Structure formats: structure tokens, C-alpha cells
Amino acid sequence: MIFGIWPGVVQGDLVDLTPMECHPEDPRRMEDALRTLQGDAESFYLRCYRHFGPGVTPHPGARRTPADPGRYAGPGRLIDLVACYQSAVPDPAGFAGFVRRSVRDVAAWGGGKVQVGEEPNAPAPQDGGSPGCLEALAAGVAAALDERTRHGAQVHVGVNAAGPADPGFWAQLLTAIGPDNAGRLDYLGLDLFPDVFHPIPEDRLGAGARFLVDRLRSVTAELGVPEKTPIHVTETGWPTGEDRDEDKQARVLSTVARAILDTGEVSVYEFFGLRDGRTDGNWRTGFGLLREDYTPKPAYAEIRRLIAQQARHDKAFTPGS
Image 1 (tube, one colour):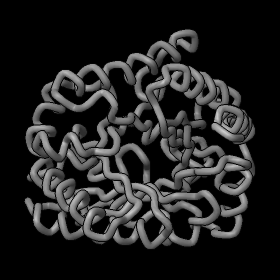
Image 2: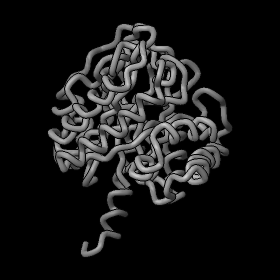
Image 3: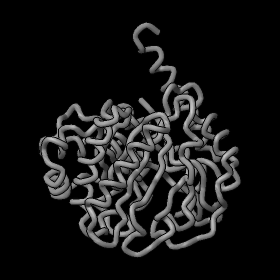
Image 4: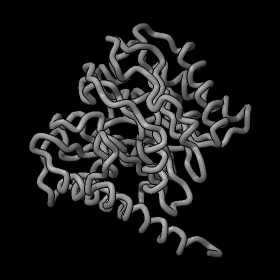
């Protein structure tokens, strides 16, 4: 199991992306927090976002975040670069070139993965609201697979979606990608946020999370994706602020993570995210394990313990260790 986290900050509301003044990143403090969170884990993903185009309606999220992913790569730290399709007009060829550059950059940073598109099943401001989205993602997947083969790059290629897997959406996406390239995907990504947008009793959080993983596997397998294709939880979190207290954040994140790990279906698990954009009572900017001033919330220590436990488990069951 490999864990990861998004270390960036968007200068806006993380739900509708309306502009909002946020404290800029402090690279030194970010590196310290990442190093401590990773602990003894041999591998750890840093999720980063890069946007092709300004969005159908330009928004503050359509910029690189973090600004310089390469500076955070280091011992065991791999880059998970999301190539977002935010074009206001259909442009599959342009996006394919953008994805090729993303593959080369990740390879230069020491390897990792490139996710082609972000939540294409969701409307604007996510990629699903951009004209020609599925055709662009198909061109991007083909380009990514070709680019990593040409350069022998240690870069995994995948796609993702948010929430319960919809057979209609996945049929459209996989048809656009084509069966050969769909069979070559290194992973299927799942963004899940239990109890964030729709309340769920705490004693049902684990079951709800497991359902989302099982649903993705069953829907994509029926559509021809090999069942051996790994599933990655590409985003998950629970924000604080207003009526959402910090102790509950720690409980929710731990409960959901442990329930999903128990399924044995997920090989990468990434949190959203490291630090609040603003810690001022607006929960839509409070997804971080750290407050905006880099002081830790209870969830930071809880997730650090979870990562350390998994690292010990993985080492104990590694042949020859």
C-alpha cells in the first residue's frame, strides 16, 4: 500500500472555485510536514494538478498547484500529476501534447504517475464540463501510453471519476479510450468524500466507502477492464469548519481509510489535502490535515500513525525482510 496527499492550495473555494485569498505555500514548512507524515514509508505520492486551458468559465483552480512539484520529490516521494482538461473548446490534439509533456516531466522528477483528466463524470468546474472532454481524454491516454513507451519512463497512466460508478459514464469513457488502451491502463482512480456533501452516520461510513470501491470494480469489470487493474483512491477527505469539528475529521478519515484498506482492492490511497486554504470557519477551504498556519489538526497525527502502521506491515511481509 502506498499513501499520498495533495500538498497544494487553491486560491479559491474548493467546491465552486470562486476566488478567495489564501496564504501562499511555505516550501520549507511543507517539506517538513510531508517528511514527517511519510515517516518510514518507502514510497509516498504527492498529488499535483496542472490544467490545459482556463476552464469553460475561468477560475482560480486552473493553475499549477503546487507551483513547483519537482522540489517536493525526494527519497521515496513520487509525483502523481493530474493533467486536467479545462479547455473552453474541443482540442484533443492540444491536450495530447500537454499530456506528453506531463509524462516527460514526471519521469524527470524521478517517476510516479499521470492521471489523464480529473473527474470527467462531474460538470464544470470539473473536466466533465469542458466540450469534447471524453474525446480529449482518449487522445490523452493514447499519448501518455505512447510517450512512456518511447522514453521507457517509469510513469503509470490512469483515469479517474468521482462517487458511485455509473455504468453509462464508464461505458462512454472506455469506448472512447478503446479496448486496447483501456486494457493497458495502470490504474482506475476513485475520488470519494463520504459524509462531506451528503451526511452519513458514523457507524455506516466504512460500509459506504467499501461500497464505492466494490461498485467501481464491478462496473468496470463488466465493461471489460481487467480485474487485475489496480484501484487507486485518488482523493478523499473530510473538512473542518462551521459545524465540522477537528476531532471528527480524525475519526472519519481513519474509519474510511481502514475500511477501504481491509477490502484489499486498493493499492494507493491519497488524502485531500495537507493544509487548509483558510482556517476561518468555511468548511469548503478546510480539508487540510494542517491549519493554514501549518499547525497540525488531530487528523495529522492520526494519519501519520496509520501510515506508520502500514509501513511496518508492508516491511514485515516483504520477502527477504
